[in-house]
Length: 108
Length: 120
Image (cartoon, rainbow over all chains, first blue to last red):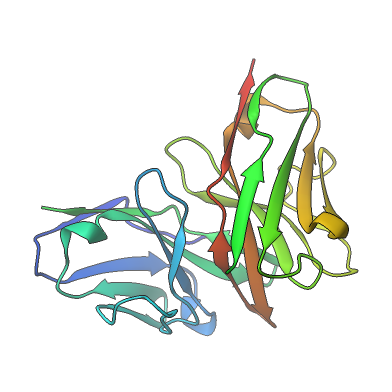
């Protein structure tokens, strides 16, 4: 089945930019979705269709996808952005959705 | 307002059974991809099962033959019957609404989850 690879952790200072990557074979040919999961809470969709934001998600959150890497970029990081971030695609070979292992974002 | 509320989790011995339920409001479970996703302690998210409309249910290989997803439309609920439970089924089980457009598939609403613990 299709494998998505995320770095386990990322640390960034407040006000800086966080770029969380999601690697997969030719992931640029797929559509990537991103979820934010704060401690003790359910996941929340923050980016869908590579770069679209659901209503209520700040413009500081953006997404990109090309080649073998997709990325979630959070500009002007705030303490409230500290969370686990999960990428997800549809695996056409298994006909199932697949998640990355998640990246824990720490705001210093 | 869309809302998903799970229930039914608990502690069960290996080999036992448990049924989880997800009560939906604000939309019909029949016309949507109702999905169960689980998260083992300290791990990532894992898709478990889906049921949509009048179609056949689908399952992850890890639960196929042991879990059954079903729907009760009068109460707008979707449930997951879990048999032959194993310690590696221990996880927080989320109910989520899937949105699908061809090969585009994502989850726009999630419940708060219900914890299943399987002892050996």
